[in-house]
Length: 340
Image (cartoon, one colour):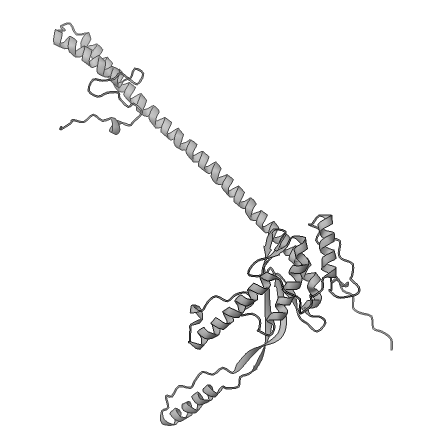
């Protein structure tokens, strides 16, 4: 039979990535982990190509062991709260993996995490208590979900009793309320999906399982860390610019306020000077009169002293009023009688 040629496509037609456990590793694209220096890139790709699952009996990483114990304790407490009829909002917040994978699949997931962290620790990567990977100083989150199958719900003994009671009540009372019993159950089926930083996902399928993609997971963790670094640096730069703009605005505000204060002081000084000049003009008019007695002469001396007290260029101290604060406004400098 003649072969029918495949249709022409513009999409990628070559296999790419690292498949763990395969005898042949396809050549990596030139851009893979290009953000690393050549030495770190070479080591990371080498580890990604050679990573293998540890033996099932091997001792797990202590952080994973501690988290597994916390998950088991949370599940036990959750069952107790459910049996007591707790509202979901009143229950403790689920721990990582506690409500997304079954108890049967949990050892498998932890085995995957154990393989990844043991391979990446020589690259100065680490694991947080809630099983996030710290890669190149950035904390990369990994989510794991197990798929569920929809199956017909088989009523429990208690539900059957409720249905029988309903049938009896219905014969006696038309208003009897039928118990709410779900039609379907959703049962974990063992198929896992692993998502890196809520973006790139790997899932079990017919052609491979996640254990075959450990090398790709390592590369994705590094790629996610670089994305997080870029986002963090962008946030830091935006925050730096915001703070710089805020600093400039604050400097401008202070300069404007200082200018306002100095201008008001100038106005207050000039007002006092105008008052002093006005008083001196009046004193000069009194001095120009022909008949000056001793009382008037004394008053002229007193008035000149008061004019000097008003004059900011002289700022004479008064026997009763002390020194006048020329920089203050008229209301603040207003002379008032004392009643004590």
